[in-house]
Image (cartoon, rainbow over all chains, first blue to last red; front, side):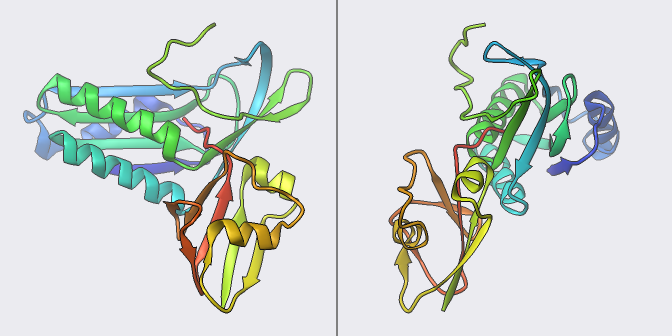
Length: 152
Length: 77
């Protein structure tokens, strides 16, 4: 299990490849890697967004993410997992979050990575403040339910 | 006895402070801590609370040395 909070922009695909390269002892054991990458949009709720500040609660964020991954490990036979999240100032197209899960079978990788991602959205203490194209600032009030189809 | 209280994100803006320290003689419920520190500001409905970095219900008791955090719904990911 690896959980990382990153103040600098990162390339999610390079991070996943590099993490997997370090899993030599699992080579041949995993048959599935479930990957989710979340990136920053340049629009939200009908407005252009030019940058965003990601606040978090240091210590609690890591503790809750670890708890979420442990819950996933208790439910699915996960061989390895990687969770990364940006903090601080971010701009459109930056990767904000990575969840990757390695398991023997695809169903477990799909389901466990989805579980981790949805729980991260509702339980990990991060907060987004948007800077709109107009220069106005606003806090994002709440996350949507990832299992419901969203308009636009 | 003292309890450290922290506020985050939009709640920090509306309370106007990032931290408080409350001296108490007995354990106190989370909502009572809010009321004592913010007598003129009713706790918003959606507020979440954590004691020592674990989520708690608003009627949970906090005691000497605890760190209590109040924050709005989380919006990461």
